[in-house]
Length: 68
Image (cartoon, rainbow, N blue to C red; front, top):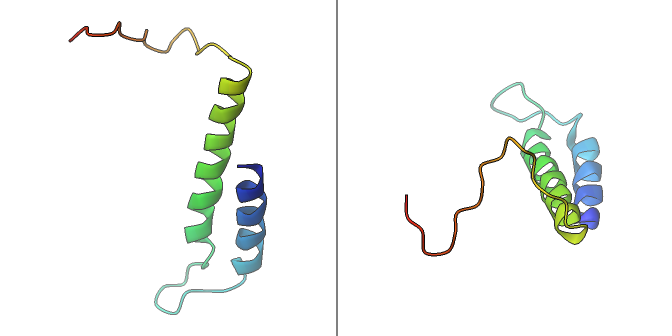
């Protein structure tokens, strides 16, 4: 995940000056989504490795076999 964050950061920087031909928006908008989702996944992976508990505001996990 670290490699994906690093590579997508480079892709965003590389494509930032390039405009899309149909709308006046940078071509980096597609890579920004990859960067954000890779960073978010990295945070979840770190939380799992270090067994960090969820925030108190998060809903409690349901018990196995329990239905709502």
